[in-house]
Image 1 (cartoon, one colour):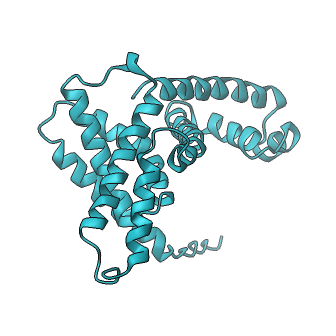
Image 2: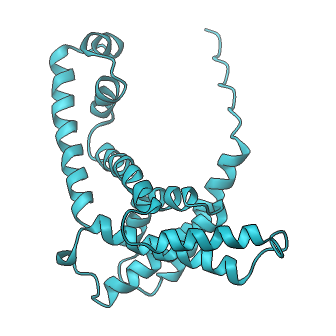
Length: 226
């Protein structure tokens, strides 16, 4: 029997390498800054759940990749401090709105810092300064601003992705594979059954069980911090 040739390595795009590097750097720095707090595991889980949401919104608000990762860290640190001091009250409003507000303030901090310390490329550029001023004014408005519209679009996708990751760790790989093929890829019962060598009842069972868990996780993430 001939030996199977090893699978060729797929090159990782340079942009993906940079993002992964910044992700690891931000996570490590965050954990170090939370080192003296009691529950690092909780904040690590918080980071894993919400970092991409904050990153995506910060990027679409006009920040660079590096600035967006700084916003992630500063937002989570600010949230952790408020929680530690007992300043977070779930009864005061939805967690979604609170997280948006905390993220908005950190993004505004970056744009204000840009105005105070313009880069060499922007010095003397009135258009650049005017643009920063306009963005700060728009982001400072509590209602009907561009950031809230971006946030609403990104929120559902992020929450669903986070819920799927949590459920994936709770069910068997086989059940999640069935759910992925039938529900997420939209293969249909016949194609899923034939591809995975199972019967229709198993497809429906996986859909029901995994789907119920995903729905529960989504509801939990929408209403509570963790």
